[in-house]
Length: 172
Image (cartoon, rainbow, N blue to C red; front, side, top):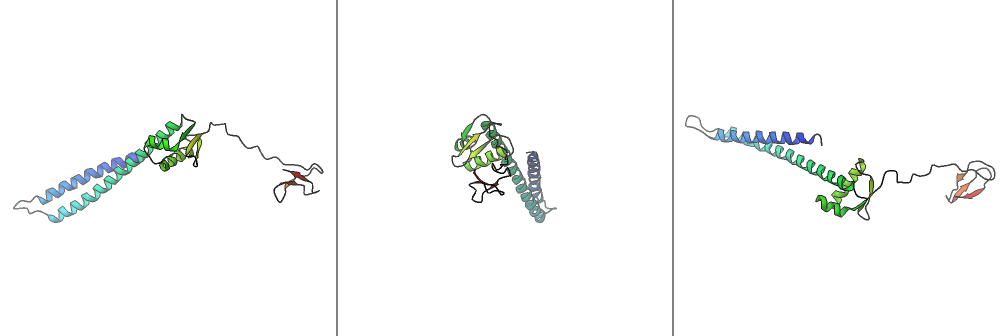
């Protein structure tokens, strides 16, 4: 969230400039007998003030959305860091979000390595895995024929292995 405070600062500055533009509208509409009101300047200031105000409000809105998302993500990480299993619906109630948003937050936290575990979408729950507890698959080891000693290959029907030299079959 490094660039997000810039949204807030620029948004507040634009809102301030918009307020000044609306003061210019009031100043240009206030006329005296020797200096009549300038409607063209007032219109221009009103349009510019409105546009700057809308852009400023949009930037403040995007800042708030980003801050809210970051806070929800931190809450998810803090909660899931101390449990082995949790239902997505319970987490959604904790952070006041929908289950789909909660699953997206959990997926992001897993993807960036903030928490270790996986989602079970059918059950709607998060299961934590302890680092090092997952079984690593055994490395592939070549098989050799008992008859002639040459390398075995997978049979065409994938039910076992067959020797390309002597034709000996082994279950696999």
